[in-house]
Image (cartoon, rainbow, N blue to C red; front, side):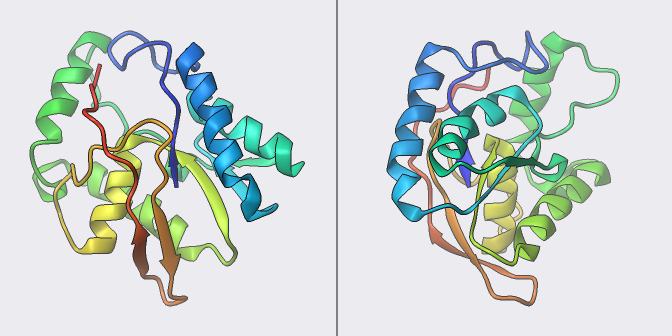
Length: 179
């Protein structure tokens, strides 16, 4: 799983921002580092920043990107303004999935189940919280925030064929600013 490159706008100002210039460079760098793995399936969140991060690798491998909503961004709370979403997310990340509305546990479970169900090696371009959700569930840790994953960091799992994921490698860490 690859966290998308740096977005051109924050969670408080844009629902679906593209990558900024640095994010585009990060996408090219992660594609170069993954290119030797061969032409695997590529899955992406439907959001632009993930699709744009996936594009250079898909081009190198000459494969189509499969868009999958189950690896998308955590849903915004109903009734929250753009500006108040960041405060909600920062507070949520201090707690556990069990502390949140059941909608969020369902989000976590759907993302995990999708990744665990994959039958072939796949590169998935996703989001900070989604990768943390899957990582936490794989580790048996209910915290929302497990790792402070850097843009374009790679977290690797293996599936055991019976619905479990095992962590092979955790992504590069950074002081991640939720904006």
